[in-house]
Image 1: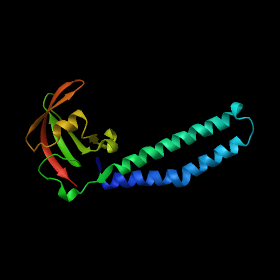
Image 2: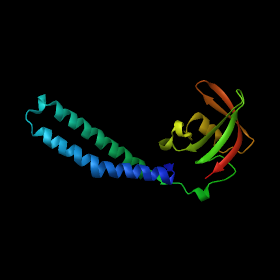
Image 3: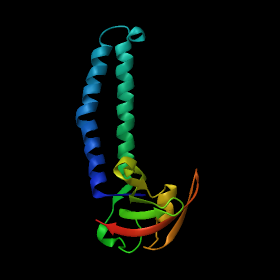
Image 4: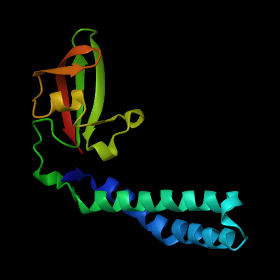
Length: 155
């Protein structure tokens, strides 16, 4: 079971509907059109259309599985004083004295450029459940990071 923000759940549902309603019919028609052009064994357009069809079907099935196995998070039920899913956490790396701020999200929402890290990442997992002022130790490929939590907000 994965938990998603309402925004991400809606984004996935929108992409799925677009694939089913727009992209797949276009690809299906392209396969039929290129198939009618003759010998399939030497028809590069047909092979490419079939590859696009397989990729589209694969993406549709993947998104369907995500939605089937996901629930939207009730933000009112989340603790405000501890790091949890959808918390925006500001922390200091104690070895470099560098301050960072990230939002803790599900793996399907992770986007480092947008400041979102997965709760399953080493840093996300280390921060989960901690309170302001506490120190977390994250085991990363580059070594152990000691992180002091400066603030927690939940929008």
